[in-house]
Length: 583
Image (cartoon, rainbow, N blue to C red; front, top):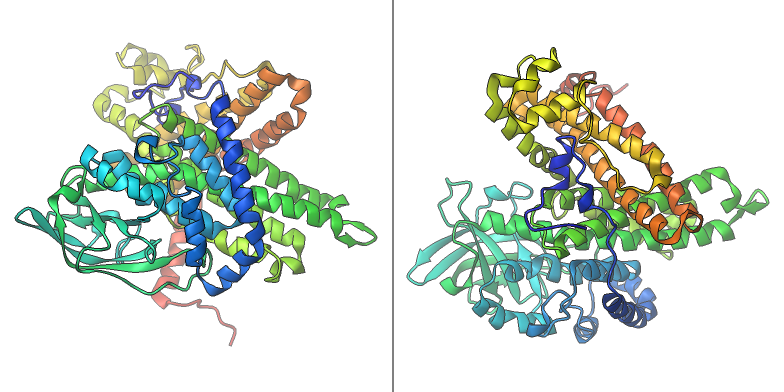
């Protein structure tokens, strides 16, 4: 892939009707040296985790990973995965790191979360924004697990709205006095290194947040009790309290007042790891469900022979393959030094977490009564999977982020053009004189007088010609929809959540489909169509599914029941109950 740090965002360009296919093709793959490293990592993980499968169930019930097991994780270097070798780490790429979390997640989500929270978000700020002195001071200890890291952003009154945090840090000489309470902190009970966010501009200022490294040994740091959770129960989740903690100025991460940027960069960088965990969970359930379907006999034959069971399994396979494709592309963006991948990271998180939920739910359904019993792994996997749609940005908020961020450049162009494009869609020829690339792009979507050379996916293998045509058509639909919505709502689009969600869902479907088509295309080119027939079937199924979903979202942009739904919600809110009891 021809990616540079200044390459445009794939999705922002797609909103213009432009397919930046060089960002996707050929589909990325690990080098031989890294593959060899990963084979060793996977083998070591199997040796460590497979014998403990019964223990994981017990630890889930108790709500704790034993200290001795944490020491085993440290001994295997699982807290050093993304730390550079110069500091004693393994220095894995984003792709290899995600693959490692995928493998851990096959065995137990609590373990994957413990390892992932340390590397994906806990100490990621130090890697991204730390000074040389800060890295020399802490990375070696983080690599050995002498220090385990946690990410402290969420507060009792501030979840997705990170700018509303109440924690404060006030300058006092060369130090900062930090006061506040953080909620639902993963690794809180076992961490010694906290990346903490606090207001440094006064409570009236919603911005002006600063990131700090706070170590557990500083006076005033205290940890609350272990939270009793629905899922990932064995992972440590606690409150963390900071009572007038004196934090040295040398512990500031990045620039003072720029902590919101630090937090968002950390979360964007860590979402590939979460996606890897989702893929691992799906692969585990597919293995369990296929075995169960072959062994369980009903009406005189295995349930695997029944069409509705095959339908479930087939869609599970498509979801897993599609998620894995998107995760790998995202991680390649990171490894290649691409800077603009926030939207694609959010898409991968949303799609992966929801695909995992569907897969686990259907796997439990295939297991039927067994799936509901604690002696089998389905119910625990279901409980563990649910958190993925909530943490590291709820999927609802991320959908708004996806739509508004991807549309931002389009909106900027519209603002710059002002009235110059009025009437363009009534008379496309009139707009041709406007000296704007945006005008040319928009005109190309609505008139047959201009060659439609933007929404093209020419580098796909000819074996995917039907899928290519569909993707190009849907891309033009997306670009037209974005334009329609922005023209209709203007700056008020920020408050039009139904419209934003529809556009986000279209974007999610198209990015995942693009990654999947890239993967299948490259496989055909490398192996020949005869060797990848099942991959071609996945591409065909996914393309049909995406086309139906996008068409449905498109049809509801102007023709919907949004106001009626809001009216019913307001009625329930006023009554604070359901109003039609029969008695």
